Image (cartoon, rainbow, N blue to C red):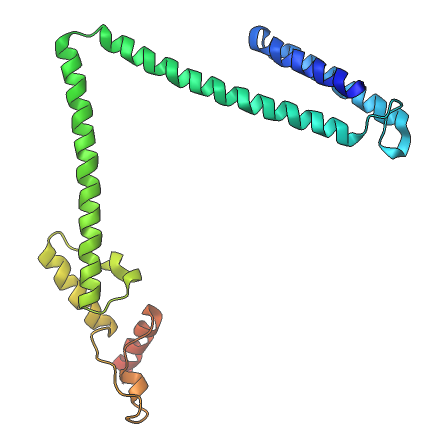
Length: 201
């Protein structure tokens, strides 16, 4: 009975908050909390009040109220979005034909610019991937290929491959101890270290 009473009090507080603000919620929740605390104190160490209400029951009521608030928030947000859409449509309805045409043109240009940017990004990613395959550069280093034109990017990829030793053909490991040194580097760090050692020699 006590659990049901607490739930009714909190639900009434929620309904009052929609029309009268949050003060009623805070007051009612405070009363509910005080009642719960009082009941817990009377129940002793067992966590139950005199009428058998436990901490678990109180937590469940709070969880139910929290879930209900979350659902109402989502509903209010959806309603606000719908109202904003209607407001935008109303504002457009008050515009002249020239103003509506200007707004439509701006929106169209924005969409075209976005599509062009996405297309350019996809083309750049594909081009870098092809250059990585051609010059044996790891895919993880594709972003290091720079240049304003395809020719510049190709030259940069070739220079990067040579600088890091990715252009060297792997040597047969059975051809003596020098085989590992001439083999293709397995990582970027290995390529840097190997080139530094070759410079010292």
